[in-house]
Length: 199
Image (cartoon, helix red, strand yellow):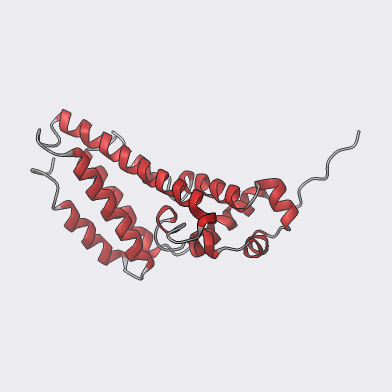
């Protein structure tokens, strides 16, 4: 029986290298040549294992959300008080400013901030994934209002929009050189907008 030749590379390692490259340079700033060099494979192997550049980027997003950003949605689940969950979300954004082995900021924010028509689908996918964080936070804040963690007149929609906007802005500031200490001050300032008394 003839067997196919085994891959001469580790797909997980190659995907991690692609993640790091896209995170540092963005979708448009990363060329296929950059990818094949960083991943240690040729173009036919890349296409065979991961598809085209866009398909690879979408796989990278999945890996990002299950790896470096695994706590992004988990931070707003029901395991801890809502106020603590939101503070955790913002403080994690601050910590991403000074990761010794990772680029600063958030791939979901920086992945495709600019680009031509060829990046429109990528931009739309990133927007969808950012929106999922806001939706999760809105649901958590609605539950917090129902349970008494927030006042009855608290606007969960506005609060979710506000805190996710701050979190995404912190990612931009991190990429621009803000320190984790500076961004923790931003997080604390944002938390001062929490309605009512801390639970």
